[in-house]
Length: 230
Image (tube, rainbow, N blue to C red; front, side):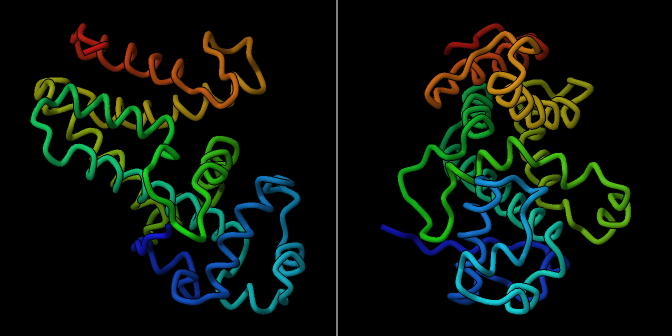
């Protein structure tokens, strides 16, 4: 069953919001599949157009270039992650429990009870792990930041930092810890899959539980809260 959720993303990322049309949704759906299949470096609008039996010109009506498409996909994922954190912590008072839920969502936002028809979150998660740093490790990052490209990511980090502040209002680095948790998750999943000597965790058959435990250990120890498994 599909559900109707439309993420509100920065208008500077697109020429026409692909969420509004059938063709736009196909562009999103098949760009995720194609980037996962061949990698972002090899991905082109020409290849995407061929995959969806359309034209390059039709893709360019939605996105100025493939970099903005990648940032759009990442922002969609980050906004979905924030939505899940907010939804799953809605009636929870214990901030430590909130942080455990947030960490679970950071590690694997594909854990869901519903699906969105044109986005395969499982595949999109793999793209986030493999390609996310390419969105902001660029020469244009300062200019794009001024245009609001990364407001979604910053909003997600701010939400996690707020939970950290609930646990310890005196902790001096809530934003640094929040962003570190986000980056740490992707890095160690990637290391486990491709550069295993750089991490102590393993990812087998999609099981990310060791990554989740690593983040819990890191966060709760830094916060001086020993109840990691509660």
